Image 1 (cartoon, rainbow, N blue to C red):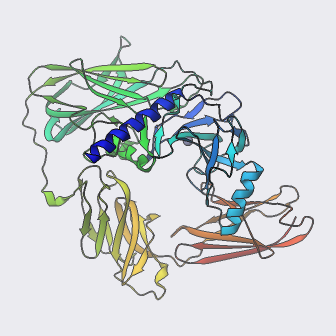
Image 2: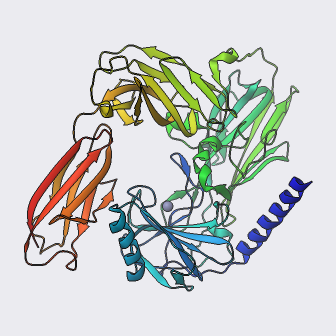
Image 3: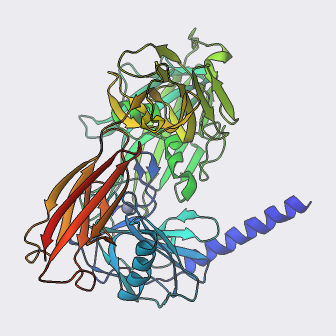
Length: 568
Ligand SMILES: [Zn+2]
């Protein structure tokens, strides 16, 4: 009873918040008209895009304003992802988020710098209480930039429910203060049909991919040689893009509707997801197709163990063909502004002898439960919600002269993982005295390193973490990181110091820079591998000589030092 009661309260609370959202009138974060270079919940590599990308005319350092009254609750600084990012909490239960910023107004900037200088770190999280920095609707608090994983100057703007972290479509709000209009239709480019759970087939196969083509009479059709025929339980996915007035960018449509025999069998509105489950986009798309061709086919049926909240469980989005007749289907997609596209297709019911190959259960890693996959010298621990479906383990072990362990392969690049899993590998040649030099290398098909899974040494075993399947082996890193000066001379002309730092094996773990033995704040940008210090005459005396010292460490504890006399 108590549980039912709290569920009812929960639903009531969510509905109240939703109603608030739809009544919410906000100010624009920018003071000029803009177009979007990204829209809400667009499919991206390993995540849904969390908000709107507001373009800033190809320029940085534009004023950024709070969309409503509230207080700055958090500033987070990262060398990747959101870069320099601000979170403003509003009294209606929502948080607005502003990413890839260059900086903040002086009072916020000094709070941030105090934290960074206090911790001797660029990447920090500054948490503020409701009294520390309040803002009014339309108040300037930051300047825009291109920091973090940003491919050009813009402001990344999000709306989240403060308490739950649920991300909401900013176009659900009452007003659209960015002056964005759109009369361009989305377009459907392809569909895929799947025989599901070994209980169905399409054209005598497990799946069939079809392009949408423009026919001679200019009508658009699903292209399939001699037509589509199927039997049993089938599912569907669609590849579609949306377009907007005044830009050449592409977006994801908001609504996907699938009709079978004129009956709506799946009605999806991509309007919300949990921040912690943004990687769940990999369960919404046909991940195998994406990993093979980089195409996003969005599925109308839900995976067995999917974290997607906007999708209903199966049998929604599936259909059973059990008669030898023609079945009519129709896909419809719609964008945020009511523009639509649709495509019709026919599947003929035809009994077949098709039998999918059924592998024994022990060939699979089960989804929805915590699994320790243990092969003695190799083990991987899957937390409960690591997998969206059961995954064929395809485990192999090959001896290696190049690495200090065997080379282990598990799963496939075409199988997604939702979270990081612990991975442990026995070191076959444990000869190095300094155990901190070991790490787990991720390998490509040619056994060349493509990444690092880190690693801690425990009694002849290395324990690391991975959020991808693939090939793994233990390697050593005894090479210090590389430091290359980019701008360290003529500082009177351009008052900043910039260097490139990188490490091709275990990766950069930390860096510390000093001028005349005093720690100074270098900002780190992962995409350029560069660190920059903006010279500040309050910190460093002008028109005089100084000693710059830089110390860079990798994850295996190798250290590189650099020093130089500078004049500023
Ligand atoms: Zn963005």
